Image (cartoon, rainbow, N blue to C red; front, top):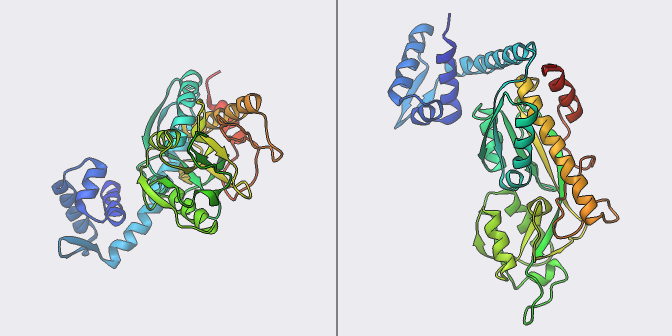
Amino acid sequence: MLDVRRLRLLRELKIRGTLAEVAAALQYSPSSVSQQLALLEKEVGVELLRKTGRRVQLTPQAEVLVAHTAHLLETLEQAEADLAASLTTVSGTVRIAVFQSAALALMPDALTRLSATYPEVRIEMTQREPETALHETWARDFDLVIAEQYPGHAAPRYPELDRVRLTSDAIRLAVPPAAEGRAKVDSLADTAEMPWVMEPRGAASRHWAEQACRSAGFEPDVRFETADLQAQIRLIESGNAVALMPDLVWTGRGTTAQLLDLPGKPRRTVFTSVRRSGAQRPAILAAREILASTAASIAAAQEIDTGADASGAPTGAAAAGVEATATEGTVSEGPAAGGAERTARGAKAV
């Protein structure tokens, strides 16, 4: 019988490309990975790897094994989820990948709630860009990812991952506070000659912002690049840059920046994804339940503090922009948050 651990190493090599990357991901030594794969070749009796320069290439027979290994790992993960669901307590570790604005706005309160409601669930959080995090969740580096989708910009899709909408927030033009000597800004077109701050190239927010500026008739003068949203905010508030910012970044804080609505009032969608084979694991259901309730609480608090505009979106400088019941966007696959709550609470000890 084939060794599942060696089969997984072969699949990891297919995903990551080099023995060194496989070793780093699984905390093995490269020599150990090489030895295990050599043993797998002996077990199957056919060549699985061919050297091409400094890299190795999978043979057609190896590709067959990789395809079967993916199904095998899904079955094993489903078995683990079913076993965990049979217990009377919700426990286990959930590895979460999250982008920065969600990490700042959602995670502190969500972690506090999780600790109080499900004390035996351990959360490990890592900040990642959504596109990278989705791939790494598919590759089993994480159990759950909080990702984003900008209007007209489709996030990467993996058939093995589900997709559940968490919230949405408005995207607005953030400009420095009004001051003597500063040009008055009433629209996106007014920023054509102003310095911009954006995330590095490759980020969905950067692509969307550039397209918005081009639609307004100009190429943005991007003088500052940083993935740190707190740094972006400081540049705006100090009068050194303008930017397009999603409302979630203002959660729990005020700002001296002016926030201007964009034509059509575009909104970003925030969603969670997990592997379908592990979606019913009680610890994952608990994490999704708490994330949904946290987003709903932020929405309720902001409606009280700032009111809502005619479209129902929160307004004001500190608006979180989360909206627990909004239905726009295309992110709707997977179990609803309410279903997650019922399942997780059903597994919780009474």
